[in-house]
Length: 136
Image (cartoon, rainbow, N blue to C red; front, side):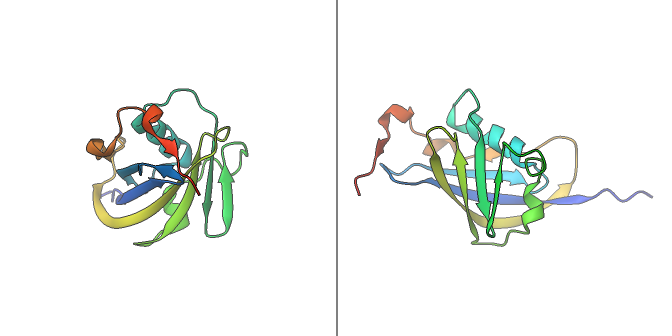
């Protein structure tokens, strides 16, 4: 009998830095998801089109979409733990910085080819025109 690998589901909380009102997203993704797919999912959640790249800073490493050898990394390779935070920069032109915190790690079902993504849509503002940079 062939054993199918299982995956873990990461429940992530993303908070956009330095804006008012606060912009928060809750996302559930497979830990097997590569960073470039996570970036695509995140842009879809935000309703953004066009791709201006991403940067992820975790455990003292910087991974970005412009380097071939690092852009294919998957989330499970970082061995994230509950309550751990990392920085995700979506859109490297405008440098939208998101603090991503791992709220929970759950055992997933047997791995399938289908990617599971859940989003708390109620937290999504009507448009980013409503979001103003915070005063410091």
